[in-house]
Image 1 (spheres, rainbow, N blue to C red):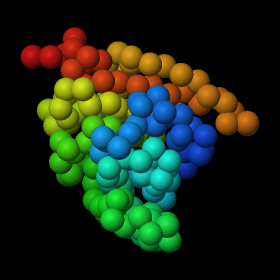
Image 2 (image 1 turned 90 degrees about the vertical axis):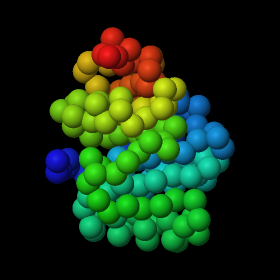
Image 3 (image 1 turned 30 degrees about the vertical axis):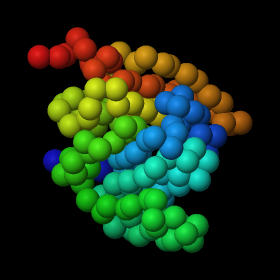
Length: 164
């Protein structure tokens, strides 16, 4: 399933708040679906000390840019870039998944999250909800220009109404 979402970079204060809200730490492995230029995984490693971060980006030029940014900061041993469709990649090792996609894409990913992520994995979405899940945290942050919504979900809790 190939879905293209317009590339709009997450403002840095929003990226930091997303990782703060999910309590990112050195115990975590972050997967950023549609990573763009790699800013969220880079912040996760540099500022929150996560063990590993994985950028998944379908667009070749953006995956290349993310790799360049990661190499410039000498983070290749901590941040991996995968140039592929996020629906093709197994994300089961993730303890945190970050998103800035569209509601329709988040909803399409919900079953992947339910089947691949371990219970307790956190999903944090900039601006767009997973409509059939209940966020455990909803926060609004102003980046100095506009307000941004952040939704935090926990696998096995937020999706519990949909358990089979």
